Length: 186
Image 1 (spheres, rainbow, N blue to C red):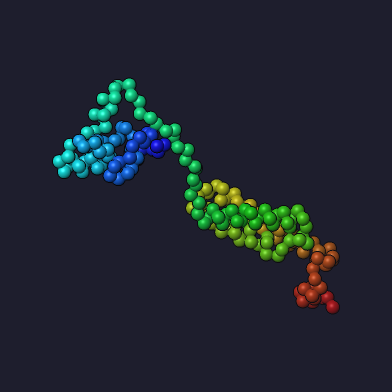
Image 2: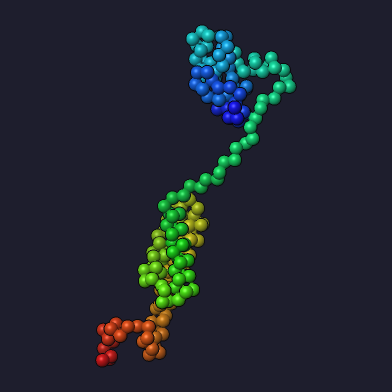
């Protein structure tokens, strides 16, 4: 039969003839007419006046050295409860890594404008909700990764802009923006 008994971890040898639940020899009750049943059904039948026999009566007839067949313990998969805070933190971490790789690794020319701001915003939201995440330490780490990816790029762009203005090289800045912001340019 290879099923577990509904009342214990032993291997089921029969099914209840009324409810069809699997039962082992230690949980199988018998009626006077030969029906096999669960303890709940046996209690109902005994209240109706039917004679029922406990599993110990049958096991005593088999002898003292009888061992009930058991199945190996089930390997339950580890399930971690995740929620929206974990998802936001994961998105912050992934977009932070993408921002770092695309904006610093490949070059500034390939960096999309909203990409560095997205991990910065998601990281802030993730840090705010990290305490109620399924795994708070992982949520904090991924959120900080997003903040670092976004803030690092923003700091680098500001540094390049300040350096270009300070050294007089305006190659990084478009002329139209320069004319509107500085009054001494023609």
